Length: 468
Image (cartoon, rainbow, N blue to C red; front, side, top):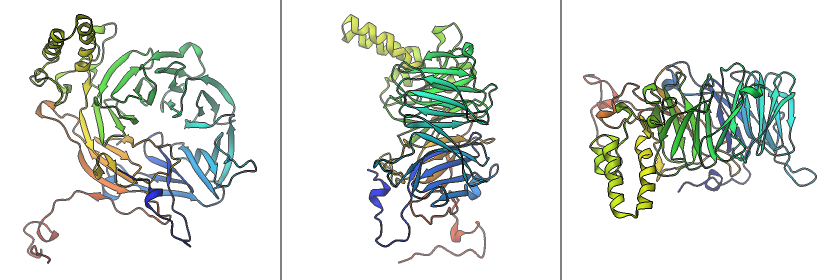
């Protein structure tokens, strides 16, 4: 069972500096950088150039802690605008005010790293649960309301009412014009699509029966991925009309979905959760639901057939959805009363139609599914890993709260008839630790071992030795 770093790491008496813990992390709009909020301020990390991450890992490019503007201040939430010097954040003073409360959670502050000072502030009567940025707008998310502001004048232009949104779910499409926003609707499990300030292009559709847990938009804003609090299924919809395109089966076991991410070509979608497995789904147009044809909703192509599951009936492992579904429902019909059997016949086929993951990456160093190290503060709002695809190569980055950035690879043209695809481990870089003086070291990569640590056939290589 993983323990909080605050419980594991004891503070030494008389130490010059206190340990620093994670409160939040997030990628920027093009996934070239990520920013983290800590109990002492914030830090910014940049990924290396194309294909170079495996060689030297991410680089810390900015650390603003215990400095001007951040004395006795924790950064609870933070978002960055591409690679600019502008950051939107929610801070909390470690020193209580005159009323004994810790102020700051009801406002978003705009930090200019070039000027090294706060240049703007957005206030709310309620606690801020989320914040997201685009060049045109800044979005402040509260539990029951979302406020959209202009970036230039910090003027509110839109006020949206939502249902309970304790996680602060809200996403902006990076390349859409006008700006496009997706957030929870007023009813449980509903998604609202807001296209600019035009009320005529705004609509709401029902995505799940239970409350939403995760949202993601592709760059153009044409697709939205959703997951509910159950965490067993991920769905993909058209934002233009809410038409369902894909129903993706993560697992039959519930989990907390912490991140969804589209690849830039919209051909793959990745999902991370509270489990130790990251799933990659292939979004093949041939498997998308056809408009106006419910009978073909979420049918899987042979290349995207269900992964083997010990709990499934033998007929499923022999191939095809219809025989397995028919065998199961026929068996149930013989054992259960007619009413119950009819209900099972209605619900069971959907399970067999769900698309299974195209590839999986199992996080290393996980003890019973939990990391050995947890660098989060007890006040952190981080629920699990967050994901980003490589811009040009079939690779995936997994940013974890254990302080490690993992990189894995997969084969886009892999034939699942050959068996289940396991992602290849590329490297792992420790980017965060609770020590205040921590610096990034070289990433860990898998390398071929040869005698003496040199190439085979090297005459100068040392022979293997037994060490007593």
